[in-house]
Image (cartoon, rainbow, N blue to C red):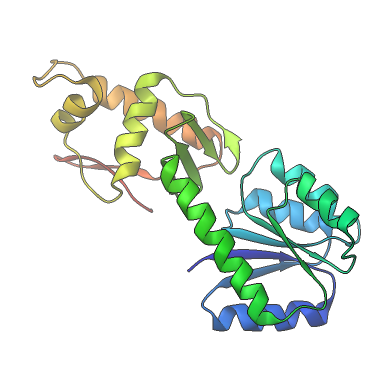
Length: 225
């Protein structure tokens, strides 16, 4: 189920949009001002954001600018100001699309689905893996936890990539040696255990839940607690 963050201060619009999107099998979370929306966006991973321009506490344009510093989440702007200048400013601030109020729900759904398809193609192209708040981009060689970048060594990155490519698969220590260190014999050390520990500590430091688990006598697995 795709998760959508709706940042909108009109309670009637919120109620209508939330009900309609939930009927389309989306999970919808609502924030009614810019500050709350920014806070929620930093605490949770959403698949798409619907953002009103005219908001209390912080404008939608300011929220959009701030979000773009840390996230590539698709952003759909809602605006009552449908002039070319206002639309251009929103797109220049990093929004992906816009919809002028009042709008038909069928058009909202079409734009949301279009943005999600586009995001999916870009994610596939750039080899992005996501699991429980951890995002690994194998193209840019970056890892973030709750939108905070985590500095990993090359070996730690390869180890996390192996686990994230196939969550819930138990990898033996020998398999990990072969895939990460590219050796097909036992090194006679606990190097795998040491690097698993390094990786856990770095992810934990940035607020990741425990996702790398020891399976006694078998190896390691990436899964929810």
